[in-house]
Image (cartoon, helix red, strand yellow):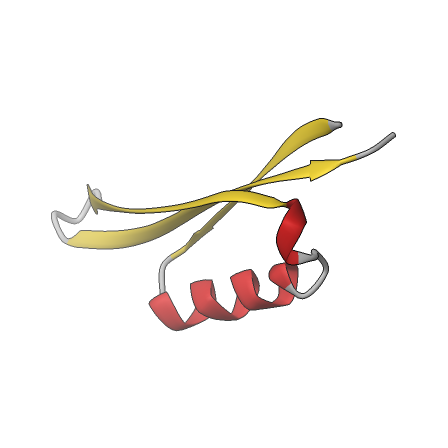
Length: 63
């Protein structure tokens, strides 16, 4: 058994949910080992702040 990580990042929570749901439909529940979420705030060159949503899915696969 091998482990793989898939990383997602989006500027919109709704886009993040859509991408995660599409990917999760490809996996069976027993293959998913962990899902982690983070948000980061980044300052742009213009001085404004943007929030980035990040998700990590750790899952198993066989060769």
